[in-house]
Image 1 (cartoon, one colour):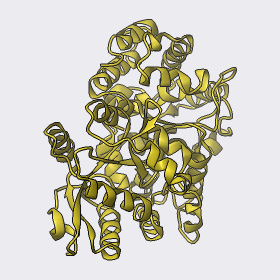
Image 2 (cartoon, rainbow, N blue to C red):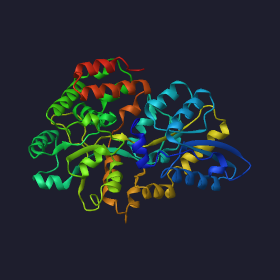
Image 3 (cartoon, rainbow, N blue to C red):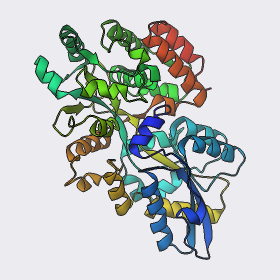
Image 4 (cartoon, helix red, strand yellow):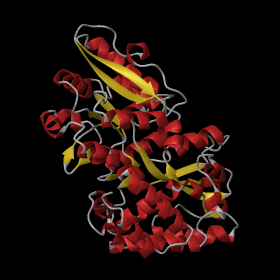
Length: 437
């Protein structure tokens, strides 16, 4: 997700405190007399180590086709990669989040169309989660190689609080509304929410849109269809959202609580709130900061339940379906071939999968669950694997799927919607004004 990348990526291995060196000095090319490709990615633990090691193994196996790497801190990377691409000086391999950012590169003609390559290399595509390709696909063409790990949004709950009140996890959205009444009656906030951060609110809308109208509702927005936000299912989802807020579904003062401070996580593991909708990285945060809460079996988790009468598939999910590698259209033919060989033989090889599992991540590879055996986190990892691999549609977080311009308008209007300062129709009108921008 766009804004949560600071928190999410710090927890999941995609951001870090400082840039490391570039090229061979940072673990890239080990010599060799052939062509060299370049590859920039995010620095910092725990993600930098698996990325670097994958390139080192590839370089060792391919002395005549090397890859030089440069690891760059999160915020600096976002600026540097945009500047380089705009100047026609991008690295051969471009690390990114897919979605709206990738669409802008495609529209500028800066990245390779990989559709035919994947057609010729079906085994490379078939080994990855199908849902990971949505954010790599623009106008029915594939422009990026999905890589690394999956991070769906999860409905977490405090088992101890549920036992205390004598209730069961919700099996439908109707159950959620019933639980709101029961928890409020006991003086426990039904849901924790770091609403000041805005992107946390967005998770609710992502699931309500999906469960009520199906994945095609937001897909129409992503595809730039005129008036797409005015779909009846959209208005219904926005209306249900405000009804939940008015029913005191969230902790009092949620609009002043920040997610970056993990205050929302603390409300769940201390029992002040019963449930929380959050990214899968929340598991690691609660494990690290919640004392023995996770180890003692206090944390429960589930996919977001169906909405009564909704058209959406309850096995679908939203969040970060993967990370993405594109090839610069400005690279030489030799550099492009090195990149494609890396995609086919180096990305998510057996060793890299094990390294990601060691960081608490779930690689987007079919069968990677075989690597969870013996892990203290096996139950949660298997759950995430199941959600990601079984989802027919894994919708990308809206603020990554949209352009940066539209994403900022989205987050601003979501905050207003949650503060009840605009109506569902006003939200739809405001968002329709930035479709395609």
